[in-house]
Length: 295
Image 1 (spheres, rainbow, N blue to C red):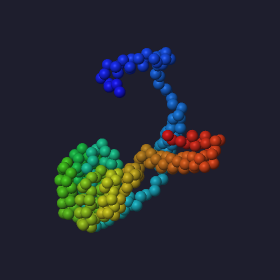
Image 2 (image 1 turned 90 degrees about the vertical axis):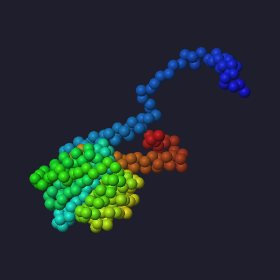
Image 3 (image 1 turned 60 degrees about the horizontal axis):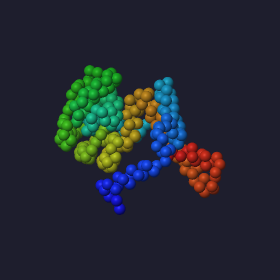
């Protein structure tokens, strides 16, 4: 065997290049503007964009009808109960930053909860982990009070900064729950190891607890310790429903339609592939199987 650093290796390599045909030397690489093998992917993308566009246009003309989630109804009922009993409402936006998607969805829910608290006279308490989120939430809550016609009842003290240390924040909120005895605790946003530490104290105080997050690792803790849990996409759907923004509601409808279309395409592709293999079809069914093949 000729080793790589042996001069004979390079001599053999040069001889191999000399023996190559002339056609190889004249070849030049070139890119393709369009790959016909991926035409099916382009068609699927075009259909998805068409569904999104039509859904957004229809949502601007008329508000889409969206099914109310049990967790949303439980939140509204808990706020009214707090207004009647005089107990405060605690709302926690999690430990995420202002750029995280769970925090953005939590702001939409907070806007509606603040308006309901103002309408029924319930005191709202919103401790914060991030000071930037606190500044945004102050504007959200202020607009909620104005929408309810109770702008004079608004105070910047509703939103207050606690700590950017995870467990220091949890310890402060747990102490707040133990002292204030809120009638409802809402945990909406990004949560990590602090989720169960918060909800077990709220459950011990007798509060109605509703949680919402997209963190899969924390859903089991919320399910075990809360009355209702908005799981994954339900959390984002609740934010869209509470905000009543046409664009958000239209995108929500478009996502449902695309999911149904994707399931239908998958079923058709599986049926076509199975039939072509079982019955050895080489005609239209085999062509349909190739058209529906995603990869």
